[in-house]
Amino acid sequence: MKEHKHFVESASGPSLAEINETVEIPKDGNFWKNLMAFSGPGALVAVGYMDPGNWVTSIGGGAQYGYLLLSVVFVSSLIAMLLQYMASKLGIVTGMDLAQATREHTGRKLGFVLWLVTELAIMATDIAEVIGGAIALNLLFGIPIVWGVVLTIFDVFLMLFLMKLGFRKIEAIVVTLITVIMLVFVYEVAVSNPDMAKLVEGFIPQREIMNHGQLTMALGIVGATVMPHNLYLHSSIAQSRKYNRKDEDEIARAVRFSTWDSNIQLSVAFIINTLLLVLGAAMFFGRGEGLGTFTSLYNALQDNKIAGAVASPLLSTLFAVALLASGQNSTITGTLSGQIVMEGFIHLKVPTWARRLMTRGIAVIPVLIAAIYYHGREGGLDTLMVNSQVFLSVALPVSMIPLVYFTSSEKIMGKRFKNTKIVATLGWVCAVLLTILNLKLIVGMF
Image (cartoon, rainbow, N blue to C red):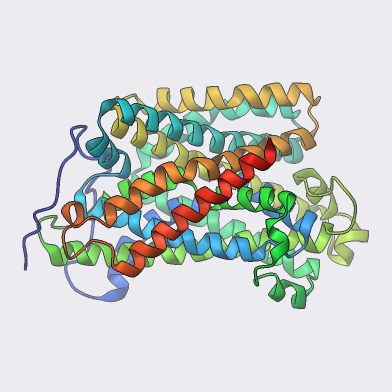
């Protein structure tokens, strides 16, 4: 056994100290026992890849452009797997999350600026969760959207309750909700009768994607799929497993099974995002404007003219329940991410309830303004959601570039754990490509 010498503790202490090293792992080398013990963090990360922001961009992408953007969903998922692998490896090998590592190597002033950008990205994510939750409450219980937006503030109490249950139980709840969401959409896509030939063709990239409208929606999908806050989250919660942090072989085992966990859960997220886009394409493409909203999809699922003989109130209710579950799942990960970046970048510790209330309170303001301005109509809120996801794509390089740099550095990671040349090259290609596309989008907007 080799002793690992690259572990460095941040000035802000262990990342998410309340869950750090709290989950026991087996001593033997049984693959399945190890996989089960390490499974969980990947599910919390995958939640960010299937939140309400993904729903509106994927369903909207299918409604507007058919199956064209399936290739974007596929490539985004591959990029996500690569980046999340780097993020978990950074946390496991160095003992610091991405925010702590960035602060460690940039200093106080730049760390504050980067925290501000990341904080805005988390708030953009929260906007999508607020809108999705408010619309779900409206569909299920008839609560006006404005009041639904206000009610989402109180999910802080749900978060506090879950935190008291223990981290392993939170992981189990999240996995259960993800399973429910996937089963609902597998069934609903099956009854929507998609065009299988065009579906398969959609996974082949087409030149039309570079047109402004398609590119805006494509970047929205990338922003909703590859979430900046997930990189910080994964680099922290990967450290929740209790392993010998001075033993290189133990660290290598942790990296290996964390990668298995992440890739399995992100594959599930990819399936769900594909199902969402296919559902939008099968039901709404070519059927007129304004059909790609949550309410129109909810109504379509009980409309015999669109959903066929299987249309029923049960089908639409399942959709709304899945939407609500998605928003609540994202609430858990959003709160944890906010705590990680605040403690890591600016070394400020705030109680969970205050942190949650602050983030959600700020995110609610633009949603309330939009809801009142559009008189509670969903169309205006959908525009706000898509724009929030595009902002996430613009903010992504701020998180991605430091991650690729740190994990490619032998000084930071050690010779054994630094990125291989292939992984490092792929990481830099993704960072440069996304930055160029984002610049193209911004120039096109103005």
